[in-house]
Image (tube, rainbow, N blue to C red):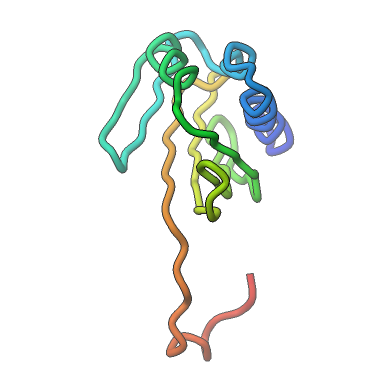
Length: 126
């Protein structure tokens, strides 16, 4: 797996999910995939255990993939995430692949913050 293939897999999920095709979006996963949200302590084992609640999610979630990096079977996607059209938050999606499908995914989402002025002398633009 290379960065282009990892990004294409995640983009396929994003596009299909945005189009309301949750079944098609979840084709990126192995049937026994594990989905984790470490910030909430949640872990879902097997696609049926997270596909159904995603179908019923009460809000609109939008994703923008900003960068993908990694190697081998582990890839990290940096995201902008919006809930119900709100302000974008930053997300990190850690994807572990078995072949060309996702076997484990860990998702982190957090609000951004303003950089403190005192660090300005040492920082560079991203």
